[in-house]
Length: 345
Image 1: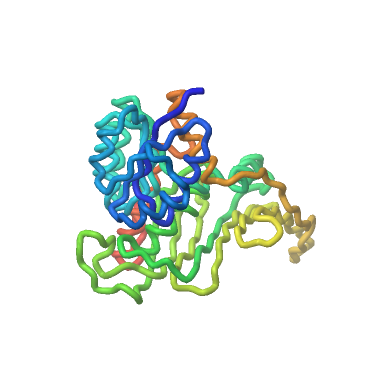
Image 2 (image 1 turned 120 degrees about the vertical axis):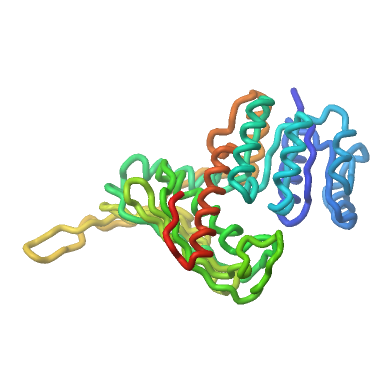
């Protein structure tokens, strides 16, 4: 069986899960782990009982000395992505990068073009696109079971973690935007955002997205080419933890609720029947949709390895998909900085 030698770059809160999945993958040999914090390297060595042959390094450049390396998985702060991904592609490695691809659409496009030129895989870890409920939800929407689509809404709130490199918009919105785009089969043409800063105001340095501070609360409106609008509520200092997204159509609503104790995907059917000047609800029913088993991140890792082995592009979560999402976030940031003015994407 062919095995791919991979290096995991960054083993913080998310990187450690990538490492776990690659260690468990039958077609992967984890050849190196890189992290600037010695205590993290020691921690993952103990946690996973890493073989002595696995290179543990604090410097990114060290992976160039690893023989037979084929690919890297990058889970570092977003501001570091461009330089790391560019180096990896120029050194000839396939890349799986944590979202967002970078913080700049032009950088994203450059990386995608570089990957194409070098005939390398560039994939972004948009984990929700591999969630069984999201895959099933797409099938429901595109089968027309909701009828003519009217609008969508999502709420993503919790109490921390509070990021210091990006605001709540860049930290949280990308998940729901990715799902809406995936379900609708289109990307928005207009973006609007308003927000509030409470915790980290008046910051002006190269790591901030908004010069007035890092927004803790953001309200987003996205308008799609066919007139469909999606409304998103984002906040990382709200004790009411929610992970809920819905698409509403003429015949009902499809709800993806990660916090649901029964099932994360529910189809609520119902429509109006007009009798003279009255609108009466009819055909109302609730259907709990069965979804396949499987960890979304495991599916991400497996898809990346399959793409590398077969040299086929990852259509669902390619670098180009990541680039489109960064374009949308950039437009939303512009709107946020302009006090909620609508911005063309």
